[in-house]
Image 1 (spheres, rainbow, N blue to C red):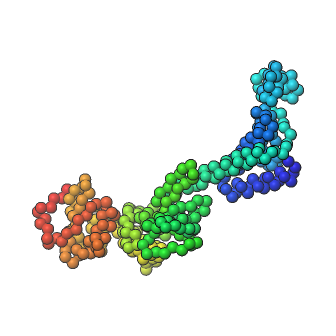
Image 2: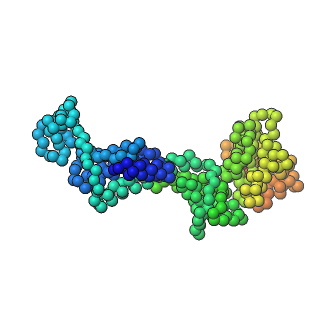
Length: 355
């Protein structure tokens, strides 16, 4: 290999490393294996090693011979006398490397070398991509809609792609091919073929991550997000709290004149968000969660089974339940209690047992 060829090799090596995002030494190791395999196939020599100088690009191959007293296999052995002409202190049983001349390989040998390099680069690229995405489950990513079929959108995430099922987009929204889209990684599996990335825009985690991106106090711990309940495309409820007496957690979420919450709502295709104050006392928390209903009296009927009865007046009953039961359903998800809502005037409190 002349100086020009060596320079071209180093240039190609650096390009592959940068484009594929893999370790340079993996490519060099693959080249060394490929050269040795090609030399073995072309020459019939059993023991050949090749080495690449990563600074100059020079490739050299060596025949590995075992030092013996009497040579019986010239392709794999060398006499002690001949070996000591090259290395003074070599002993019987050790090996010596004899540099081989560079040669143009035959078609079959060259094909074998290429196959080894390509396969190793593919494997290394998969390993690199898997490593990049392995901690992305539960995270918010930005990708580009690259194609679609009957049931799914396919999102280009850079070095990999994810699947966004069409039943996981926000109801009513229209996504256009080539457009940028925010997605939540709902499931991630790393296998031999690289990462399998399942995406969602309806998962409650999507709203959770949007909030964390827009509200600095959620990231620095000033405000804590206890839970999120979501009916995608319609309404979400979030429960927040703080340990700082001078901080209004709900005010921080909404922002001045609704400036913060509006940025989040603009990404949810008309979906509304109710910010609820979390309380360690489940009675108070459940009453808060049933907002916008007021004058709600809560009785925990079974603490172990997480059952609660919410009593309210006739005027607030429909608000507590919500359209098609949405409000009480979201409140149940938010508080982790199964909540039953009843009109206080129609319940005999003497029959209700509180745990």
